[in-house]
Image: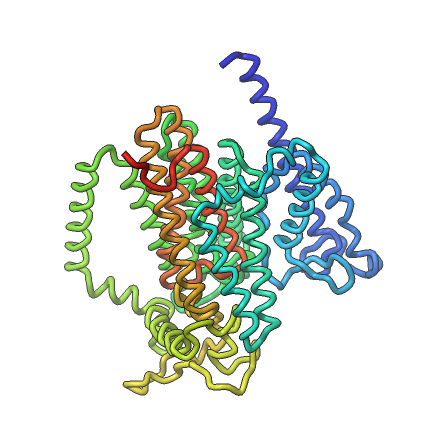
Length: 519
């Protein structure tokens, strides 16, 4: 590579950094300025600035963001995950009069408008973008994704609370799928897909830093529970932190063991991982710990040099785990079952009651579910979605008659299992489509790894850590998703579809065939 080309790439990288920082700062200032829904907003007091002008106070910074994003739309798409933790309805941004949207929604609307504008006004974009190419990138993913979307739309029609279902359809299905289309249409190069995954890491790092800051400098805001204090940062719930970070941290850990990295680069990556690791520990979320452990094992297994070493390591690990469990099974079971207990019932046992409630609900609504975000309408008597219909709340154990501890939490908004959540929300067809997407994901993942095994060392060095990181992130999401909600949430839906889109782009970049080629 010539010296002139290296200098040009360095200069472009430096310019991208500056533009990226400009986009983040300008969009942050747009969100903060005049936002009366934020307790810490800037100039959000109607006594300082007239109330009629507050929604327009940050518009100059939105304009700056749009200009910078127009210049680097793929980079703007890669930075989008930084907006995901601020999806809650608690702190929306007033756009105009009664129109209120979360930061993530405003960002996706803006990026979609810019993408359409470039498609119309830029000849080079119009020449490179085609629906045929997009269809080729999606491949067999298109059919289950379309069925999932159709099932989600049908669930709105049959939902008891259509308003809840319509909002959930927009935030958890339509907009995340729109983001996937934008990513597949505008992110094409290795550098761009790397930036996309780094954006997810950056979002996890941001929440990790917030968690560390809250624990050490804002102790009065920590959630006090029987087992101690738990951080919650912008989420208000400790488990949400683990769920979000577990989508980005495995990618960073896979990067840590990538080929052709100096010890200084590995040290820098480790430093970036530390706030996320510390925050996951401070959440006291057993699901997040298990998910991270599964991701580490996954990365470690794929980093071992050959199958013999992998087999030996697996046997040793199983033997050690068996011995530890045999010696300390009482302590281990007591730790798992008794965590975060109320009325003598821990969260592990409560999840079993939740799963039973979900299964009873599914038995009555197997085909189309109860509707997106309609779980609470059928689960319990609550003020969020009050109904007079039969509820599936298990307050007393049906066998022993003892209290289940569920009476303390009537507003648990999902059944704490990713598959039960999808089934009860959008029915069996949506569940089968979701399972098909996961099967295709790991099929494609294995196909890419097989392709890279015979690729030149330089190509493996570029792509392998990206592929392994994406796979490990999905493994972490699925593991934690067995005892929590890791998909049908606004931020996590974007994360799930982002991983799918990244893998589809990597398949094309590595020139991996969908199926085994005939001999």
